[in-house]
Length: 154
Image (tube, rainbow, N blue to C red; front, side, top):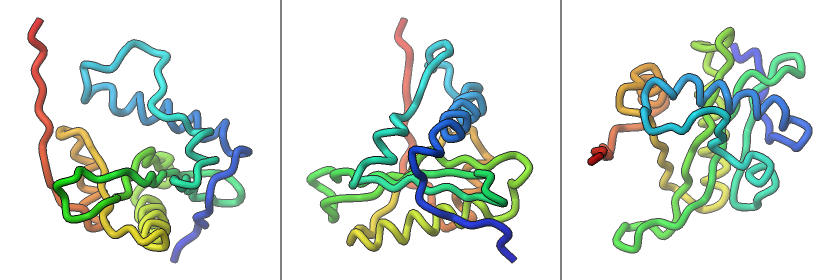
């Protein structure tokens, strides 16, 4: 039985969300040698919370935020069969609450938000070697789609 609630984030949540962002960066740093030195930031969380084209969701237990994620409406490439899609990011679950369905509940809420906006294509990116994240996303229905490759020519 779900022991947490999922809701839209507010600006009052920003301090916790900024902490989550740094946890995400710390966890992803081993997968990406191109990340700049700290301090860095991935997201403009304030803007995402305020945007009509985005939804930031949090999961909470006893008024403590334990997870997060956002959905952002983006324009699709002109050659695709859809004009818009929803991009998911900022997916984070507190260590003490992993494996309890928090990520699934947040993804489900973000997908419902996307559908309520008439958008049925949902995408996200994940580092190729981040196997725990890949498993978590596959568990909620995502499938591998494309692999981006890179080379440093210096």
